[in-house]
Amino acid sequence: MDSAPPSYQGHRYPVEIISHCVWLYHRFPLSFREVEELLLERGVLVSHETVRRWCAKFGQAYANGLRRRRPRPGDKWHLDEVFVRINGERKYLWRAVDADGNVLDILVQNRRDTAAARRFFRRLLKRAGAVPRVVITDKLRSYGAAHREVMPSVEHRSHKGLNNRAENSHQPTRQRERAMKGFRSVGGAQRFLAAFSGISPRFRPRRHLMTAAHYRAEMTVRFAIWDQVTGVAGLSAAA
Image 1 (cartoon, rainbow, N blue to C red):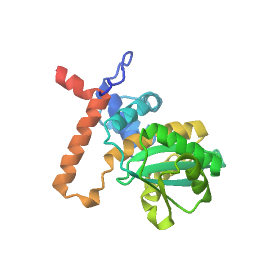
Image 2 (image 1 turned 60 degrees about the horizontal axis):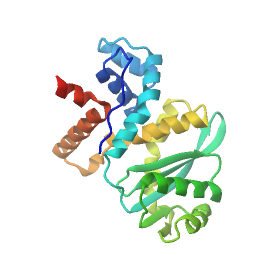
Image 3 (image 1 turned 45 degrees about the vertical axis):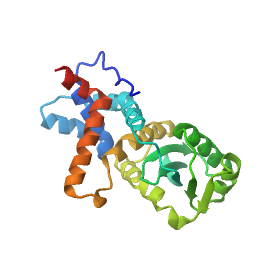
Image 4 (image 1 turned 45 degrees about the horizontal axis):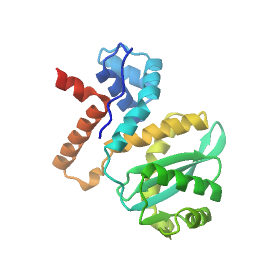
């Protein structure tokens, strides 16, 4: 059963403006001030600090709503990790996607050893609520050790050339990291990327595999689901 959209009680701006600001910030490499400027051009006076609070309050709720409406993940999962600079220190961003490129989970950790891989595997299985048929990783040995402990019955393929799906999914994150001039804290990076990975890919279908008509129809459906998640559709129906 679909959950209800988040409550907007106490907010003087309509849900259409709030949801649009959150969408702009997570869909495009924009700063809060740039979102403020885009709204100003439309005659809407919103401060960048208000946009920041809206994204912090509603971003994860919207992402969760989109995930609940997502089809069951495929049975082939791709896992990869990349380093990120957070406040000048090297951390590692672990990511899992299915064969269609849907982000299953992300986790920022201090290391990329067996303990970190084990922690990510267990979290991934819990959040996905399913067990894959195949797990594909690069040749990092920590994956093999964690795989034998956590999911020994699942086939494990370790080959760098097979893991382009996960590696390509890091590109939007790198783009945002540059636009934000890096992340300030581990917690802040985890919170932003958790919401970002649930919202941004939803509006990035594999355009090169679609005709123009198919792409427009697909995006229309996705925007309709966004309106349901944010509560805009409910307001339209009530009117």
